[in-house]
Image 1 (tube, rainbow, N blue to C red):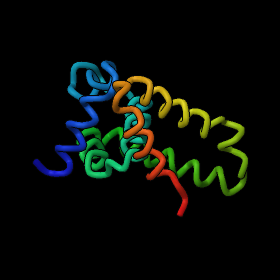
Image 2: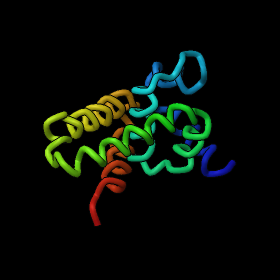
Image 3: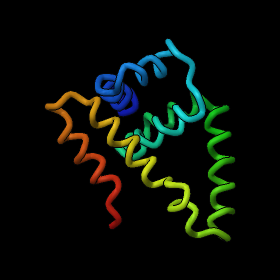
Image 4: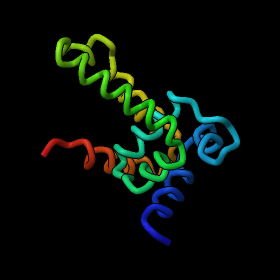
Length: 121
């Protein structure tokens, strides 16, 4: 089993039922779902799985890339954009919600992954 498959299997084994249904095609993935899930997988350091999600949901990924380009333009003239739009709080809530759905015995492991992948070196 390759890295991508291991990351996918691990993520699917700990995510909430809603995300599981989205990722297994039982429910339709929305733009916000895609943004949230790929933010979480990136923050976990699951880059191989994130790349799979980008390939699988290429239309959503392209829309996300366009949004990020617009944000960069906005930040040039409006450096407080993330603060005013509560973007950091939104991302922190996504991570908190994710951790709360992880089985208790695995929460410390995933908190450590998040810490390792969000520390500024």
